[in-house]
Image (tube, rainbow over all chains, first blue to last red; front, side, top):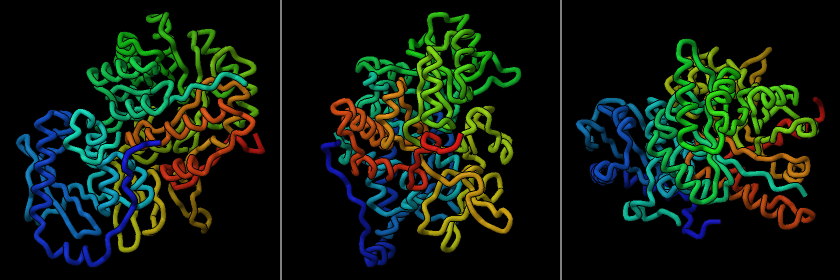
Length: 151
Length: 335
C-alpha cells in the first residue's frame, strides 16, 4: 500500500461556510486560473480537449468553505469570471476534502460521484472532457505543481 | 496449483497505464481515441504519441500491452477499423482484442504473426464458439462474458486449447455483452455502433430539492435521494415502475468482485483476470490493481491459508458502483 500521506475524508464545521460565503470570492478564481494557465504553458493539456472548453463558463463550489470560483476559457487562456448572470455550462460542488483527494489522485471522481460526495451539473459531456483531461495529465513531471502527489 | 493468472488492468490514459504497471498489473489494455473501441468517451484513450509512450513504459517494466478494437465496423467505414488493426500491429502491441468476425479474419490474414484475443464483446460463451475462433482465426485467448457459472467456465476451459480470461472486478451491466441495444433504444447510439454506452451528451443530472434526477435523452431513468448512492446513467441501472412497483427492474447498480472465489478461479485454470474500468481515473486503477495483486500474491504464498482480508474488501467496496459487490453469475445455483 502507498507510503504517502493520505488525505482523510472530513467536513469543516458549518460556521466556516457561513463566514466563507461572505468573504470576497475573487481570490479563489484567480488562484485556480493561475494554476490552470501554468498547466497550459507547460503544454500538459491536450489541444483537442481544450477546444471543447472554448467560451464555456465553469463554476467550482466548495460546500464546506462557502468558497466559489467561476472561470472561462477563451483565446487560449483560462480567465476568471467575477460576476456572471449566466448559468454555468458546467458546475462542480463538493467538500474541500473531496477536491484535495481528487487533486492528489487519491480518489476517483466516479467513486466520489457514486458516493454523492461530488455533484456535477450542466453539460455532462463537457464534464467528461474536463475529468478526462485532468486524468490524462502526467503529473510526475511537475511535482512542484502538486504538493499532494503521492510517491 | 496452476500458474497464477495474469492480472489485466484498464488504462484510459497514460497516468492510468503507469498506475496499473506500477501497482502490479501483468498486462494493461487500452484503446485508440476513436470509435474502434467500446470506451470512446470524450478526452479518454490514447493518441499515437501517448500510446507509443505507454507501450514503451509498460514493456520497459515487463508488462504486456493489449489493444482493444472491440466495436463493430459500421457500414461504409470498414476501412477505419482495418486501419486501426494495422496501426496496432505496427505499434508492436502484445495482442489485439477483437470482437468482429470480419476484423478477426482481416487481422489473421494481414498480420498472421499478431496475437489475437477474442473480446468479451464477441459474446462467445461456449467452447464451440471459442474453438471456431481458434480454428479460423488463430485466436489465442478469449474473454468470457459475465454470464457463466464457475462450473461452466471450468467446462469451457477443459474443452478448448484457447486461454480463458474472466472478469475479476468492476461495474456490471446486464451482461448481454456485444448484443446489448438498450442504449440505442434510448439514444440511438450504443457501444457496438459508436463505442459508448449512454453517451454523455444524452445524460442530464438534475438537482432537485432533496433529490437528483438522472435523464437519458430526456427519459427519466432514476431519482436518488441525497443520501442514496448513485450509479452510471444507463437504462439497465434505472428504476422503473413495473406493475405498480418502483424498483431496479433490470439490474441494481453493483460491481463484480471475485476475491472470495479467487482460489477456485486459479484451480480451474483461468489464464487471466480482467479488471473493468478504462473510463475510471488513475486513482481507481491504483486501488484495484494493488488490491488484486495483494490477493494474488497471498494466494501464491500459501493457498491453504488464503482468506479475503477486510482491508482488501474495504478498498474495493469504496470504488464499487452502488457501493456493493457481487459474485455475479459465478456462484449462481441455476444455469
